Image (cartoon, rainbow over all chains, first blue to last red; front, side, top):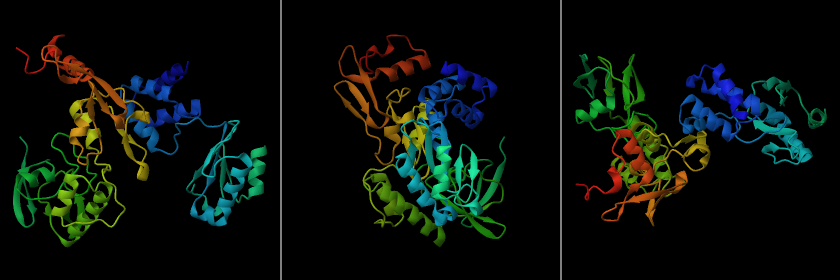
Length: 149
Length: 240
C-alpha cells in the first residue's frame, strides 16, 4: 500500500530523477517522514542507486528519516531569537513535554519539536513555527498555550 | 578536431587542446601542482583544494582549483605564489589532523613543508576526498556507497548505514582510499568490509583451492561481460 503511494508521487513527477528533492518532499508529506522502505522503493522506481537517494535525504535538514509526531514545532534558535529568550522557551517546552532539550518526539507522538537556526523573521523574535504557522514575540507561557490547543 | 590553444603558466607559453582540465595539462608539461583527490579514472571532484592555482582575471588574481578547471585560450595562470603556499599549507594541516597516520598524506605534507599540525589529531580518519564514492560509481559502476549528511557530520557510508546491498566486495574503495580509512579483511573464506557492514562469501578455485574473489563480484563480472557459467570455477593459474 505504501509503495502504491510512492508510485503515484513518482508518476506525478514523470519518473524524472532530477526532481528527486520535490519527490522526497511529497513523500515526506504523505508519511510525515521518510521511511526506509519508501526510499528503497523510490530508488528502484527512479532507477538510481539507493546511495544517491540517501545522500539527498540526509543532506537537507528539512527531511527526516525518523518518525515524527502529528504536529511539528520549530523553535527558532537564531541569534536574534536567542538573545530574546528562545533558549528559555526551549527549556520550558522540553521540561513540559519531557523531551530532550535538543528537540525530539513526545511519547504519545503528538508533537515533534525541532530547533532551527533562524527562519528569517528576526524582528518578530522569539519565533515559534507550529505546523507551518508563524508565531512571533513568544514567551514560555504563550508557547505552552500553543501546545495545549 | 579540437582546437589548439595557448595558455600562459608561470610566464611560460603552453600549448594544449581546448577543453582539457588544467591539472592534466600541467602534469603533461611537467609543471608540478600537488593533488590528492584527483585520480585518472574518475571525474574531477575538486574537494581537496590542494591543486589550487591563481588565474589572472581583469588584472586580479583569483584562486581556483585546477583539477576541474577547463582551460580556454589566452588564460594566464600562476602555480606558485606566497598566497598559494600559505593556503596549501593550511589545507594540508587540516588534512593531516584528520589522518595523521596515512603515508600518502604525510608525504604530501612534507613535500609542502608541513611537519606538524596544530589541530587535534586522528590517526586514520577520512579526509572526504570522495574517491571511494566516485570509484564505486564510475569505475565499478555499482554505486553501493555514498555521502551522508553535510558539514561537520558529513561522512561516507552505505545507504542508511546498514549493509550495502549493492556492494560486490571488489575492494576498489579500499584500494583507492589514500588514508587507509576503509578496512577490509579476508578470513575463513569471508571478505569483510566493516565500514559498509558487508560480509561476502569468497569463491574457491575448484582445482587448487584458495580463494579467488567474492562470489558476488565474480557473478557481477560474469554477467557484465557475458562469460560462460563455469568461467570462474577455477582461478587464473588453473585456467587452461
